[in-house]
Image (cartoon, rainbow, N blue to C red):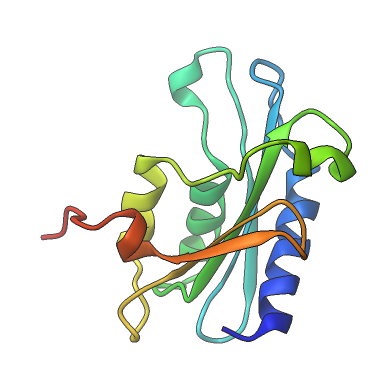
Length: 141
């Protein structure tokens, strides 16, 4: 994957993180994904007092893209951590997608057959995986 695209996705995920609504966990997450057309869709985590009704940033971004007619995702970047200044995120671990988000992502594989998943603390500090590494035996019909 092109380094410029990686940096753009991380930057957009960091912007989305600022929109998170997380009054219960104080753990803010942002996600940005790119589809084959080059369009980028973002999402943030949104909590609810009835915690099961909360939504992760990754699924918010996926659902936004799908609601706009997209059916394939090339890559997604995720950045998250406790309610701290962005410059302090390097003190925390990477924010990996939960199992539910990994399964949702597996519904929208690109023609290449796999999605690049970028977990980041900043544009300089990130790790990249294939979705198949993070979810080796997804449930597919």
